[in-house]
Image: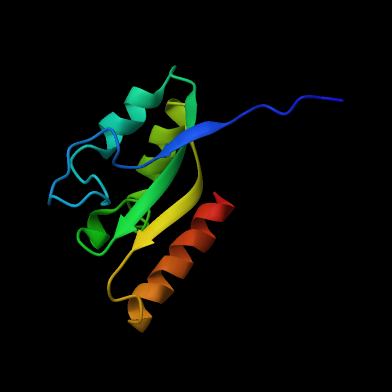
Length: 109
């Protein structure tokens, strides 16, 4: 029987300082540094975070920013297989539609 490889990762924002004092938030200022710091650690999985504060600055949400995020992940051998959405206005139709489109586009890339 073949052994399965254990994959260990972490939630985004755990290796950066909070920008607005929340324990769970997208690290706007440090997301690239956080991804770079994972290379070679054995932590090759990152749970991406999307929150309402800084929603449009999140490269995962922005079609213009997504290639930069994908390049950064690839260069540092880090994968995203899950997303945490912390949005207090999830009932707003616009936000839900934007997130659904972003997830659909990401899965294609």
